[in-house]
Amino acid sequence: MAKRGYHHGNLRQALIEAALQLIEAKGPTGFTLSEAAKTAGVTPAAVYRHFAGREDLIAEAARQGFEMFADLMQYAYDSGQPSALAAFEATGRAYLAFARKHPGHYISMFESGISLNRTPELSAAAARARGVLELAAADLSEHIPAEKRPPAAMFSAHIWALSHGVVELYARNAGAASPFSPEDLLETGIGIYLRGLGLIPADD
Image (tube, rainbow, N blue to C red; front, side, top):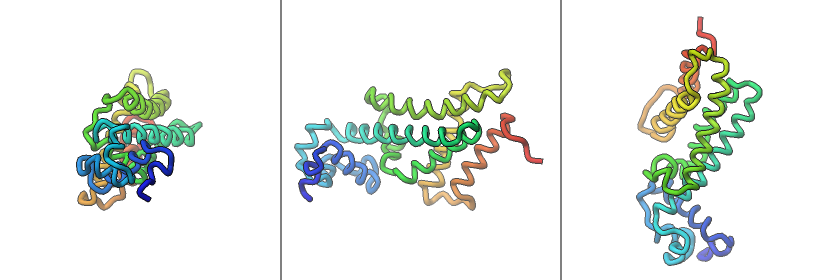
């Protein structure tokens, strides 16, 4: 067990997995590199062969998270085709599902204070994830008259912000009480937004 990182033949990934465990348990600033090494079953000196500091370790966890997130968003988008509306709504649900299934990655991505520009690789992975939602928004925007059509980047940013707010306040914050589930809050919130753009019929 003490040599788990070497046993798997990938010490770097073993350290990332250890960091994810610690991030979930203690938060992104609640652990040291020495603790990550101990959790991975290696010496502290071994960590520095792969990461210069804790922030670099968290940044790599965030990069992997964004890659996974983008894959999930792309799958959700593809699964909704050929309906632009179904594809768009699926990406919103995927956001919530990701936050629940991969809390360590989610915290690294959005709650660690690590700049998305820390490394080119992290920046590219985050841009890819944003691009999937922007593509979904662009597809859906085609159904809006040109003179009333918001830029796809603005459209997608609104939905990203709504999804993120629901996750932060009601899916990850047990102290924020709501009589509605996060799924219902997100679905109705997106529905109100899309209704305002004329993309779905107004209720009678």
